[in-house]
View (cartoon, rainbow, N blue to C red):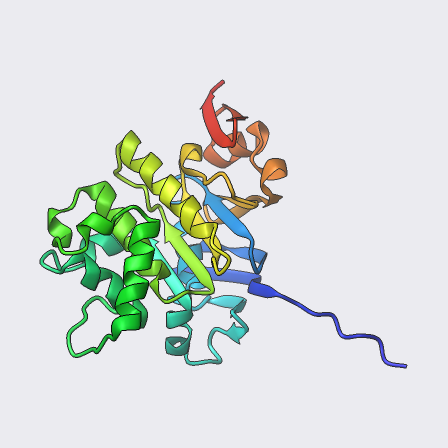
Length: 267
């Protein structure tokens, strides 16, 4: 009698993944499995490898060594263009690339085809209704007819989040989405993200940051990187410890939770 086949639900599987640039290893080796519905945060200092890791996870860069399987497709053995509409991206860098004169509604619509503009693309009433829905989720409905350049930095980041969610992606990749935001704008962004992730069709999430205060309350797992190497990974409560984060940042830290939010301070 045959043994039952194990049912795997991995969105991301990295095995021995390394990335090299200019003769140096800037990431890895990394072994990582992210299952559907999980919400991961990647933490580490500047230059720790967070953005490089997300570029692999987001199917924007192939590893130099190892195997990277994203949404069932092996990088290097598949047309990654077919993956891009299934992955939502949000980052402060993407915000800066959007044409300033675009209407907010058009910025959100551009997420359907993972493009930066909506020229020569047709959108129907269902598309516009979906755009209105995600704008409502992130608290930006009144901004729909304004240009993106007329919005505050915090508003722009929430619009980019709506754009990332527009196509109902299976995976949401966020690279320091709160970079440069003041305290109220950061809190609005975290709240908007929690609202969006509370929907039944919410994607699996992987977000990079170097501030514990930006970690969403619903985060389930964490990965700590230093100089491209994994310091620790696993369930968030077991991973975000004072000792592990002190090692990650090379600085003595006390770490804790106040309610559902994380904090860190010097020892």
